Image 1 (tube, rainbow, N blue to C red):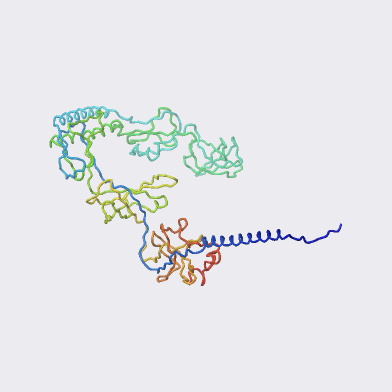
Image 2: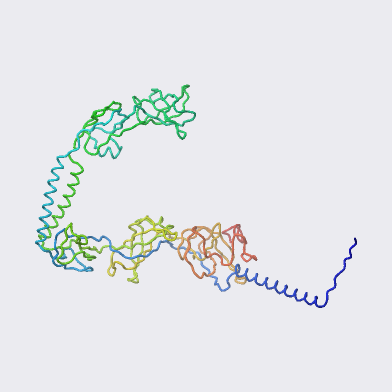
Length: 548
């Protein structure tokens, strides 16, 4: 069937509607272009309000540091304890008082001191009786075996300390209980019950049997009569093929142990067969038991306490042995406390020697490995304006504390105590962790980062308002103001950069740099060709990176 193709004619009303629709579409298209161009400009165009700054590459010193704050605390605080039972009649000092060595702290009731001396003397008499009784007790002068077996290894020798032998070897000697030595080799095709030949270092051959195969390892047993513990042996099959090698060990082992005395002489030798009750070695110096040593230590404490009581009784009061500041007084007038008292602990005077103070600061996990004991620090105290104090890192607590996914560690910085410093004052410490002298420096804001390195701009077109001359550089250490340039620039070169609204410092190699070139996305060139040189993966204008 033949079809006619005819052009349809539009009525005047339809023509008018078509014209209006076309106009709306055109306006929408123009608006979209304007919006898109503005978006591109906002994202990629340079902020015209930003000021272009320039800086000359110059030489100077630069250092990096770790900063933190905390509260001051006194170092070396000592507690002067009052012996149990002593009654303080009148305390003569208050917390916060400055004292000198020999200053009166409190008067005492001499009758209470005399009674305390008597009680302490009775305790010493009782301890002496216990010590005398313990001295009669002794460790046996002989060590015997409780089972039968064969001695395979002896660590002890005449004159050796039993305690030293136990510390170094965990035993005085080793005994084989079941009559076998063992060696482990790769199992290969071996199975439990297979017969093999084991060759010792001296060439002696011993018949062996595979006792077990587990996890690819075969355990071979041979007699314990002859082979030496620790020897490296070869294992062969019936045809003489070497199946493997290993170190002989005691298959069923007993450790002979002790805890006191000195070895006098041995009653057995390696290889000896022993029976239950057999004497293995003799000891001397077995008179002091653990109980005896404990009693002696307790008596020494009581001796010191009696000496303090005698001193207090002789002087008729309690005096300070050191100078400093009274930090705390855990005592009251007309109070005496005994060891059985329910009162709040012992009586004491807490005294700071006022020599040094310290401040503990938190150090981020990314910086803690750069901090070490002995490093220098600068400390400021909020209440002492206009002054800084030299400090030293004296302690690092490497047991971290985690919070919100961030782990921090504590570093303690000590400083000499000065007038006006009080415990509890707020202080800040800056620990110098790295420094370079005679370094090439530029402002940290002038440095930009790409995915593969760092660059600076070495030219500025005032007419076009564009930065250029991208120059790749290598960097060293940096702080919040400057960065060290180790390659790519020379002294006297000029770099250009946009003024940053804020600068939070920059650490090369750690994360991204928030500065960069505002409005320019590197790695693919700036839209519209705004950045000379396009992709910073290749060369810069004028040649290779670093050229101008």
